[in-house]
Length: 77
Image 1 (cartoon, rainbow, N blue to C red):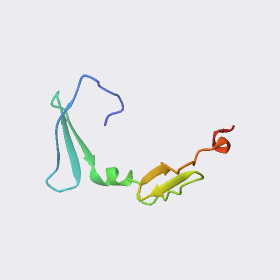
Image 2 (cartoon, helix red, strand yellow):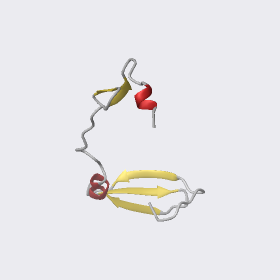
Image 3 (tube, rainbow, N blue to C red):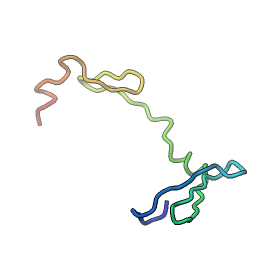
């Protein structure tokens, strides 16, 4: 949450505040951080559409390789 990474600290608790607008996180050193839920929501991608290319199947959110879907053409430079 901060610009640096502290590998000696862990999250000890998290909750939504009383106004339902912030995620409040407390770490093992008793530091408390508050992040606006709107800021988190803005990071969620809800409109990207995916298409399976040559040799792939896309069912729902899962890509898989078609039977015999990888040929020399897909492996070539």
